[in-house]
Length: 500
Image (tube, rainbow, N blue to C red; front, side, top):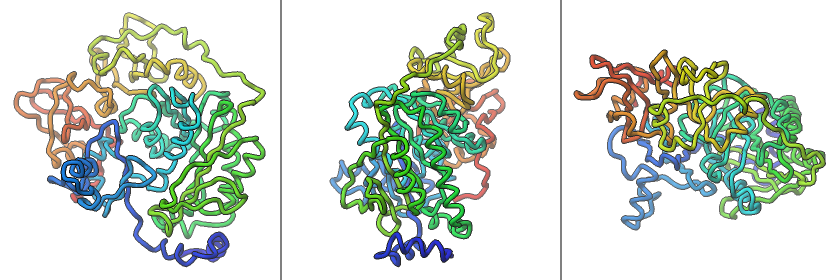
């Protein structure tokens, strides 16, 4: 039930259509997903069997082949402001779709896909940002916007995904690994620490912690937790976060400010105060009239609002800022001593796990000892492959931040043996010919994701094998000849035993 003070505030914001707004909060939330263009496999959204017309990508193929509208064939509709976003006619059993765990798509609220339009505006207006850029997703967990940004960035760009709360940062790291891209570093730091990385980032996405009013339909208990005091607390925290991180944005760089709440204190008021205080410019983002996105409710500024009675989605707010490019302090943070470390000597069989190994440098996890060339990396802990083009920034971040993962986690050394990781299996850079592949049925794939024993077909070579579903890698097993050890990470396993 909505609190009376919230109702009064909402009526002031929406004097002409409050009743429609309140009624929309009692409707069923829409379900939406984003396809991973790097993997481009159609999700098996409706359970077991052949669901050709129910799969968005297959539906697109059907449209080309038959001339019929894919949405009419399947009940699936495009999210208009996101090229890879789709609305689904009902909520499938995502937990029991192996392709969900394989990172072929991400379940994301449709309104929160709107930052795509802000990025397209930036790329259209700023020629140098059409090339390789460095981006910070400041409050990135659980990973929806990070995985979305990765699909949009120019080649050789780098995304740093940060989360201040460690438990959420670990979830973020797992979702980034499943998405499969190498151009990401996951960190766990307070915004103030990131702010010391002077002029490192071309773009910052700040999807800020907020009072969550825009999620009242999806999460009804949030209505009982709402208070005006919490709104004030969130508004204050949001300003502090932006102030703390502002120095790490390059002069002329952009910051996307967003929340999933309705009130003006956390939205227009904060944006107006911050742009005045920081000397930033607000940049309009083109929107189509038929999208039915609302504008700013105060201060007459370019800002974009999603209301559930106007758009098919939850509550969302976005404003795009540009930093003054005449900032007096132009010093740029530089890498320190770590660049002088002797590089790891990596055996060719490990390098050959990547399709384009020559593009990568190899680094071990925190605390590892790797200066002795005689070890050839053995007993050095977890091994990561990082795009060589990002070596300098990786060095800077590893010296100053708490880095949880970087690039592709290849695996770890166990004495003379090298144990490949699930992150490698899910990477789009995996050389699939480096391992024998075993295709699983849906039922057996779910059993594998529950970390149950998997039987290998007769004739499967001993050693590490890649298990796949519909040709898409899920992870590794180690075939001993008499049994196959399931190597899927415990922290990722499907805990539910129910079947859809």
